[in-house]
Image (cartoon, rainbow, N blue to C red; front, side):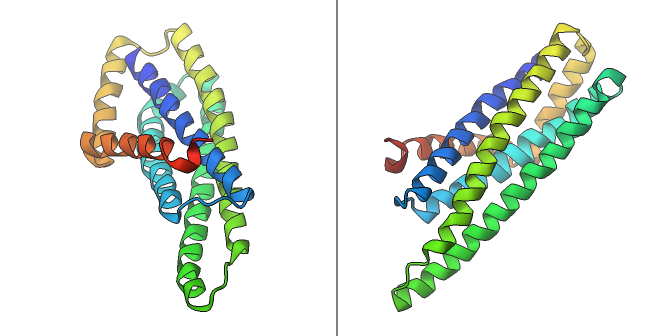
Length: 195
């Protein structure tokens, strides 16, 4: 089914984000330089691509369609809880980035480094990477079960694909999704990502 494969394809992209978040966290823990602008980009990609776009497709389309099958309702309940967990990590990451950014201006004035502000960012990036690894693995197994059981009819598949288009439009349209992919490419090619 194309609707299920579409979500699995998103997971490939999301794992790229996971790799970036993990590498960024590692660099920050090693006290290596990562531009704050790049960390902001990571945060935006997490919020827009993972949470708003991908989880939006699952939460408003795919999960409601499959939840009615009683054997899947408990899995879906757990996935929704995990989505909320991921959102909370992303919110805390954004908060810490904003705090760090505001303190950078102060540090420029008084020469302070504020290294203690970097640790929470490294921690939330690491937590998000672990979350993505665990969560997408479980969802992929779930999607495999859906496909193997031929749970979604051809008509339901077509309805879901149309719904995904609506989700894309709500996330800023095809151009915005392409921009997110370009930002992922940009991050993967940054100097701090190369070693």
